[in-house]
Amino acid sequence: MRRFIFLLLGVLSTILPTIILIMMGRSVGDIILLTMTTYMVYVLVSILMVLTWVFVSNGNLPDVGDDIPSFFWFLTLGRKKVYYSDLGYFYVSIKGDYVRVQKQGFLLSHYLFEVSYDGDIESLRLDIKKELDFLYEEELRKTRHKKFKKDKLDLWDGYIDIVSKRDDKLSKLLK
Image (cartoon, rainbow, N blue to C red; front, side, top):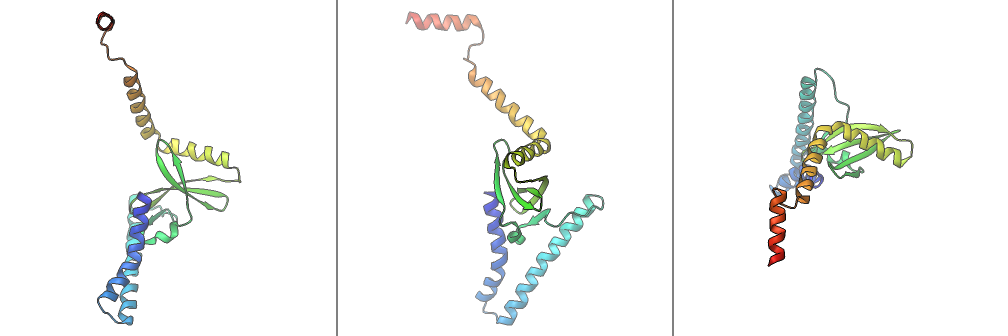
């Protein structure tokens, strides 16, 4: 669902300015000028996002493609969806001898990590799982603990003590 909303917002941000200008009856020159202005605003917003990142991360510049806003949706096409039962969906793309793993948000596609890829799918699977386990260790621990507690509760027969269990079984037999 996040991927769908991300792509929908991206496509809308691409075509909506032009459609609005056409519906307003603007001339072709105005449409081209205002559409290009809109896309320049997108670029300025991206630059502000990068500057914010630099400020928050103490001067470290992010790599191109680390965080992709929805108005650059076309840069995220061609990614493969992978699923981890405890964490949900992630997206991967090949970059040379590496596979990059991204988490999809509603407004942003966020780069998580990359793993080496030599053509062996099984080792790729294990490497991605290992990295996700490391990144989401606390979240996984909480999720699995909650599930374990629920499973234990489901197995409980509901009797508080042995006497209550015995008395209930006796009364059922006598009926």
